[in-house]
Every structure is written in C-alpha cells, then in structure tokens.
Length: 203
Ligand SMILES: *[C@@H]1O[C@H](CO)[C@@H](O)[C@H](O)[C@H]1NC(C)=O
Ligand SMILES: *[C@@H]1O[C@H](CO)[C@@H](O)[C@H](O)[C@H]1NC(C)=O
Ligand SMILES: *[C@@H]1O[C@H](CO)[C@@H](O)[C@H](O)[C@H]1NC(C)=O
Image 1 (cartoon, rainbow, N blue to C red):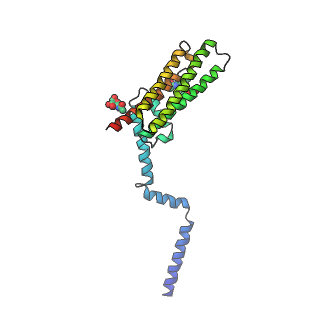
Image 2: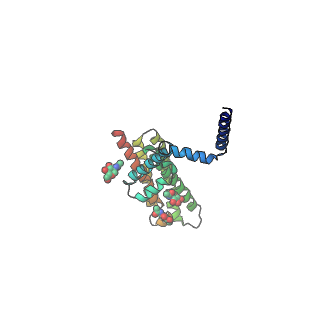
Image 3: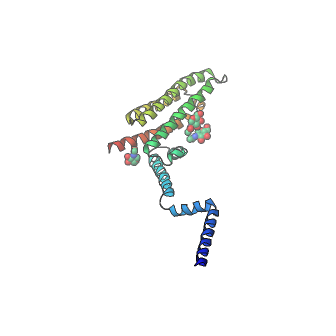
C-alpha cells in the first residue's frame, strides 16, 4: 500500500513537472487546434469573407471595377465592414483625394515656371477642389446620421466641382493629368454604395 501511494505521488509529480516545462507555444497550438472549427478562426474568416463579398457586389455596379476593388481593399478596415462602414470609407477616400488634389494645385500656383494662363485656371481649380473636399467631409457626417439624400446631393456637387475644374483648365489637361478623372471614380464608388444603402432602407 505504501509502495502504491509513493508511486502515485511520484507519477503525479512527474506529470506536473512535465506539463510546466511544455513550451507555451505548444499549449497554445494545441488549444487553437481544438477551437479551429468553432470560434476564433471562423469569426475572422466570416468577417473577411463578408467584406470581400460586399466589395465585389458594390464594384459590379461601377464603371471602373478593378479600380473600385483595389481602392476599397487597400483599407484593411473594409475587410470586415458592413455596407455602411464601406460607404464611410469610400467617402473618406474621396474626401482625402480632394484635399490631396488641392495641395497639388497649390504647388502649381506657387511655381513661377507655370504660365499665367495656367495659373488662372489652377486658381479656379483650387476653389473647386476645396469645395469638393468640404462637400465630401459633410457627406461623411450625413452618412453617419443616415441622411442619404444629402450624401447623394453633396457628392454630386463634388463631382460637378471637379468637372468645372476640367473646364477651367481646358487646353492644359496635362496640369492635372488623370487626377480629376480618378477622383470622380472615387466619388462614383461612394455614390453607388449610398444608392445601395437607400435601397436597403426602402425594403
Ligand atoms: C489622389 O490625389 C493625388 C493628388 O496629389 C494623386 O496623386 C493620387 O493618385 C490620387 N488618387 C488616389 C486614388 O489616391
Ligand atoms: C494616372 O496617371 C499616372 C501617371 O500620370 C499613372 O501612374 C496612374 O496609374 C494613372 N492612374 C490610373 C488609375 O489610371
Ligand atoms: C446593380 O446592377 C444590377 C444590374 O446591372 C441592378 O440590378 C442592381 O439594381 C444594381 N444595384 C444597385 C445598388 O444599383
């Protein structure tokens, strides 16, 4: 009996020692293996899957499908966003681009080598793009309060601003290159998502 108890005690002690010396990573791996098909991994997969599925759905309805997908996927927050989240990201990308274009135009206005006629056009463009950025920033707030009609109106104003800039620079297309056109693609994505949000609200 005493022999049996001692053996039991010794075995328990050995087991405890063995377990406490197992590397943490091995334990973590074993635990992850157990959970593989239920919680953690699956949740992440579903989230990522939802974002990607939604992006392809949205980008089916724009003219520049590949551009639309690559812009939305470039923000990691889209990967498990719902439609409203995706809409906010699209609006912010367009707003950021309008400010970036404004900054770019400022460099042209400060460049003494740019000829005066171009400077005139560029100075109109600066006003248009500053307005476009404001319209888009206001659209972000409107989207948050689900004022989708305002979003539609204001994003369209931003698109018009950009077209007015093109007119102001007629004959000097190389100044902005494809920037105006690419900006309008960003707006198109934002408008498409907004339309989907409106349709969702109706149904
Ligand atoms: C946004 O604006 C800047 C303007 O300087 C431009 O260079 C950039 O390529 C634009 N497009 C995107 C998608 O960010
Ligand atoms: C816009 O033009 C620049 C070069 O000026 C080019 O690198 C870029 O790929 C163009 N963007 C698109 C979306 O066509
Ligand atoms: C997207 O396009 C399809 C077919 O072209 C159309 O049936 C659907 O209503 C459109 N969705 C949105 C949100 O515009």
